Image 1 (cartoon, protein in one colour):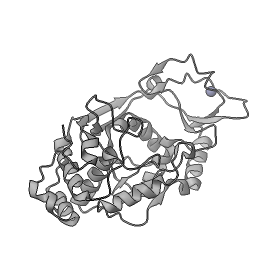
Image 2: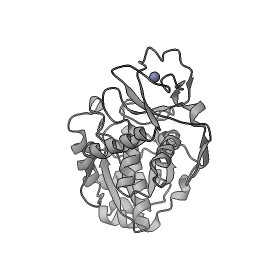
Image 3: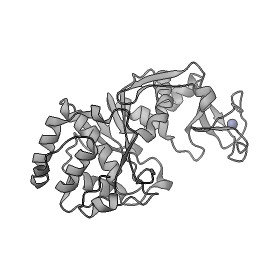
Image 4: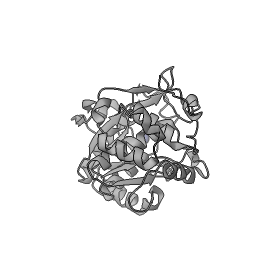
Length: 302
Ligand SMILES: [Zn+2]
């Protein structure tokens, strides 16, 4: 079982369409189910109406998800229950350190490396909650990128699983939801690969099994920057989705025949499921595209 889990922080752009299509095809190729989960757990970053626009775009491009759309915010009781288990087991603790308290803390590629200041106790009123880590090494074999490993205590330190503002942190929410929804295979952008070891650590502490991970290259502008709302990626057009869908398949390393762009969405998807081979994305980190050309219906593959 696979899933696509966008955050409603902006519309669906070409980069998120690639991730949606790769996870969809990977699930469908093997007759699996595919869920859509809106990760609406960070209201300060969300854009009103974005969830509806993402779903409208997915529908327009012919994606068919199984069951109802899942809204992550509605899993709040499960997130709280997991947090209680971690606290009760002594795996997590309250941390009252403010941003300025941590200003001089050394940073690594994953952000600040929390030095464990509050491990022995914290008397602050307002606290975040961190999970304890150790340095035993968390490893997994990515289905596309090969063996990966992190030593969490020295690379990230104990990380936040519940925010100071009372909101669940991303790592905990995603781990609990994937487990409860029975997700067995996660296909997502390589920009999320360095969060995987922290998520596996939480799975281990909570006694969950670890799904298979396949991190696909992310769509990038010619200058190498990832396509995102911040780098000016445009919403995918909703008129004539067939043409762009064929470009998505080509960007994902499939070789759609040129006549396919004249077919219906149903014909394109059935060709894509039948011919899907994810292996062409192995060891790649970037798919360079000209997204504004694509938005105008031109070939934007560079
Ligand atoms: Zn602290």
